[in-house]
Image (tube, rainbow, N blue to C red; front, side):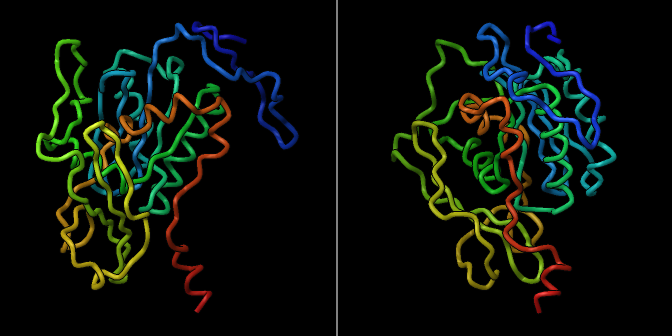
Length: 265
């Protein structure tokens, strides 16, 4: 059957032998369909959700800072969609945080995003928590990036950094416990592109001698990843994603779960 936007959705009853036929899945959306994106961030202690179109953030939601995402996720999605004056069926894409961070939180967000992507036959793409924090920090500075939280006006010039084309590196870290952190470094160009100069990795706190931003460790400037920044990072990725991309969005785990690590010892 087709919804109001002429997007084909397969009706099926889930069962051990049920299969989705590839020829029933449209490869592209109607070009006239309004862009309506949901961003889901569940890797950190604070649930963060956002809805936006191809130019602006339309609404956002922050849950309690207490690792209870399973209890608040769907209520939050309902709230953020209502504030944006849209519906679940109107979504054209989903961006989800794939980690690193909480094993349980990452799985909750991914399961939700992939289920919506499969049911609605819309693209799903991932963004990692470290680049999301870096983007948020750099975007708030005068670094050659327009404010993506507000509608773009044609007569509003983009803010540029007159001193240099690329800002200094920014190092981001998330507490990985056991005196370790998940860390990465980024640069922001005046064209608005976030460049990774040090890939996400797990390192001992004692080996890092640069200022860090992130959360979960006393040595860090506490900042949590926000769905608004995740959505901004995901916009160009969604343009290139296919309708079955939900199949290939995977978690970014930089270490094994604690029980697995104990077995290896």
